[in-house]
Length: 76
Image (cartoon, rainbow, N blue to C red; front, side, top):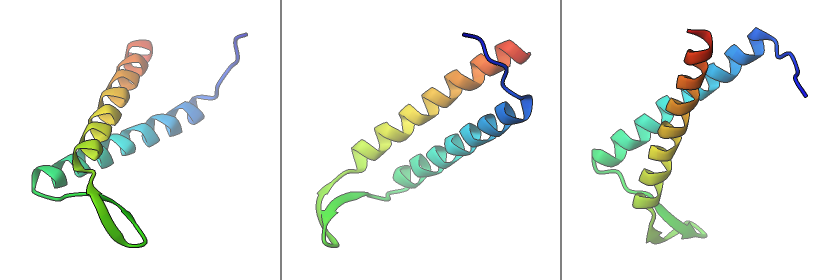
């Protein structure tokens, strides 16, 4: 089933995706500068989650790059 999606809505989605990519890049920069992230319970860190955070942010960037590329190929 094909549906028409208003261009304004698509632009809002693209803006959101680009913002998510920017946030992911900022998180990667923080990690590269020495920030660490920890899982915890009741305010107490239980284990280092930095590697997981890094891989999740890298995945966000890869996904957004793929979607932006698709968008650009359609609207180029």
